[in-house]
Amino acid sequence: MSIKTKMKGNPVKLGGLVWLAAPLLFLGAFARWAWVAGADSYRWYQDYLPVGGDLALSALLALTPVVVMFVLLGGFKKPSHVSAISALAATFLLATLVWGMPLRLAVSSAAFGMMMAVFPILWTLSSAVWIFNMLVESGRFEVIKKSLGYVTGDRRMQTILIGFCFTTLLESLAAFGAPIAIVSAMLVGFGFPPMLAGVIALLADTTPSAWGTQSMPIVVLNSVTGLDLNSLAAVIGRQTPVASALSPALLVLVLSGWKGFKGVWHVAVAVGLAYALMAGVASNFLSPYVVGILAALAAIVTTLAILRFWRPSGTWLLPGECPEGGADGCLPRPAARSIARAWSPYFLLVAVIGLVNSTGLKHLLAAVSTVRVEWPGLHNLVWKTAPVVPAPEAYAAVYSQPLLLVGGTLVFLTGLITVAVLGLKPSRAASIYLGTLRQTLMPGVTIVSILGIAYLMNYSAMTYTIGLAFASAGFWFPMATTFLGMLGCTLAGSVAASNALFGNLSVVAGEQLGIDPVQSAGTLCSGGTMGKSVAPQDLVIASATLKMHGKEGELLRKVFWPSVVLAGIIGAAAMLQQHLFQ
Image (cartoon, rainbow, N blue to C red; front, side):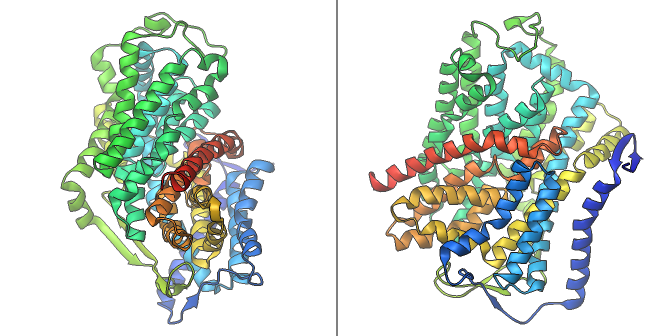
């Protein structure tokens, strides 16, 4: 018999609290050790071929944590926190026993990753879900549903407008999983089944992620490789739009199958092409910082323009739904003032993030709020060696976050404004926030463990072993680099992190094959976008938002092959660029 305790009406299993306590105790013990121990004086040099000097065997063994996680998650249908903690244990064993990493360095690198998970990732997730929960509790989300129903009651068109267009806009403004959390919650609120909403949100947040938060992934790639920012953006702008053009069509096919797709295929194609063409033009002739926003706006304007002059011949509904009265077979239009108030949190979100990131406030807030900590027991103690770097190089470990500028803080600020706009009492808003924290409790355990795995694999050299194996692909190097980027994003949870992880490696490997370094690095970033939908932390964000904890494996099975196919299309475009147009 399971023992349960009550927290404001929500049952929380004590077993779940134990799982939560494990990573927190780990962080606490590390903090105490680091404070007492201080900095170490020795160096540890990474070994990329620990298994008898054989690259293939070493790479296969390095993939073990990834295999453990996905087999437990997708094959044995274990809860995500069990899968993640099991994979973390496997990573510790391999890092220390096979790669020879000293235990203290292994503990410190895992703790470094866990801290990155707490802030900014969990901070962003809880803030985004809080806004949605306030809309639901206030009853305003019903108005949003009715207003969208007035624009179109057709579920295929709603998928294009909200699933694709709104996701791409949010991704260009606030990354770290916020678009997945916000859009999946919105779709469920509109009446989409939770699993379907999660699949749509995950698949939609793939190709736009190269331009996330004013093209931060490309800025990171520029910083780790030293390559020209505009040149990198131009290459990526000639690769990712190929998949972006297909994305709305893919979402509609996932929703309605071929029969439903035939009725709106031209809309899906037009919206995808609008996004792709604007992204291609902006990345090659304008600024990399505005690509995502301009492309998303082009898609939104295209969708609304089509709906202004054309409607599907029949309103496509989900199985079991009944059409209601009103325009397009939908709900009557609510009052304009009511619509504006209901949508205000999302208008405010766009306004706040856009204002901060496009004005001098960005630099001011970064200057006054950036925290920079050289991570104890790790910073500059691990050394990279050839062929990852030309000469031995210290591996920095610096926790640096602009506290007032990260997406989670800006989303939380929007939430505070939303409290007043929606007319909620502060005590009620605080209660909703506490409920949101309980909702994200167990997913938090998973995300903390996953980031611990990613950073431990990085500093132990396991990730670089995998990267070197991909880099030996020869003629197929562009395709291999695409999937290396996808793997990096899957491991680290973001395209920016994948670029930081493998950016320099892709350049070094490409130069050995006579490939333009800009082409190699750009292909890595383009491929990384397809890891967004299968990254464990994003799967957990979707399941947490939709209150489907334990369903991450099912989500993974539904998004895996579409993501692989789109990655293959990007890889094919990179192959053509390299072998036919260079």
